[in-house]
Amino acid sequence: MAVCPSVDLDRWRETFEGFAGRLDRRFARPESRRRMRRFLRGLMAGLPRVNCWTLAEHAGEASPGGMQHFLSAAVWDDDGLRADLRDYVVERFGDSGAVFVFDETGDVKKGSMTVGVQRQYTGTAGRIENAQVAVYLTYATPTGHAFLDNALYMPQSWMADPDRCRVAGVPDDLEFQTKPALARRLVATALDAGVPGRWATGDEVYGNDPTLRAALARRGLGYVLAVAKTHQIDTKAGRKKAIDLAVTLPSTAWNRISAGNGAKGQRLYDWALIATTDQDLPGQHHLLIRRNITTGEYAFYRAHSPAPAPLTAYVRIAGIRWNVEDDFQSSKELAALDEHQVRTWTSWHRWTLLAMLTHAFLAVTTAASHDTEPADGLIPLTINEVRHLITQIALPRPTPTAGFVLAWSRWRRRHQARAQASHYQRQAAALQLN
Image 1 (cartoon, one colour):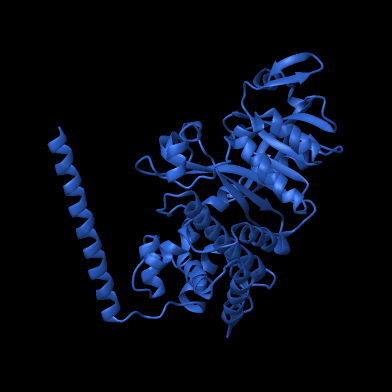
Image 2 (cartoon, one colour; image 1 turned 30 degrees about the horizontal axis):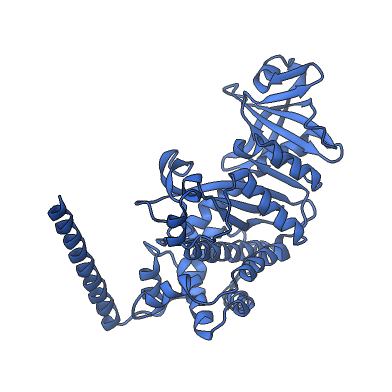
């Protein structure tokens, strides 16, 4: 049934089955293959809350036990499934000029036993919170963008506590890695797998790390990495702070260039480029400076290219960095990336991997819809609209019976009653000890 050239519901149903079918080989049992499909559909179903309870009820299962087992103990080829994500994204979006974009996101959590959680800064909340933080790698091209990979940041407080790690299922051979080191590993894994790309970009956390910059340059990647205004730059005149270089530039040094399309039009800034050196690395090295045309506020970037590149090229890469923010927003809203209520290493990685796969399916399906012209007077389909149409029409959930809904109500209340009784018993025991 074709509704309009860019909306073909029958094709979308076939596309989802084909997508899920390519993942089947990563699961040892047929029950897990079926549950994987139900899990993916549940993640993009737009449920008010997304956890193993709501996913199981949405899937028509009698209790959340099967979903919980699927995440924690079922036999998967986790590495193979991660490779499938990478291959799927590259098959649709692969481009020799692609940009690797890395950034971290945090999920606010309660308690102290969820793997990787501690009080730390997270941009999600904009402050220090009790949270998990993970580094994600987005693959961005003119055709589209989606996550390639991720890595959970394990703070030193966790790595210094082997008992706590053991309870959470953290691998015994895991070593502490900074966020830039995790980004370096993610990019290296992609390049070693043959993923095409020419550039990398990230924020100050990554730009201020000389080891990451050197690793990218030695792999032949250009980069545009944000740095602080106090960042020290080597120039022919000596070592200078980035801000000190910016304020001495003449008016002729600035060029007004768009960093890409924004929600309200072109993102216009004034830009300047100063030649620098960096650790005796090969290629062209610059300090890229952005100045807000309204406020005069500055932003700074370490810029590198293996071969000479124009200012416009560096500006374009700086603008592409926001693709990862788009992916964070859409994957959390449309694929429940941040709604996991799991505590262990394995369950966290499996949940986020399935969410990245769901988001990639939506991103690829959206990009494919742009290959056909929309009807007159319509904007191209957005990823939000594609998710809505798929879950409401192409892959709708069968209407549950009254008995099924009431059975789940009884199950939840029984479980909550047992949990409440357990809490009261522990509280009473603690009061007796005191």
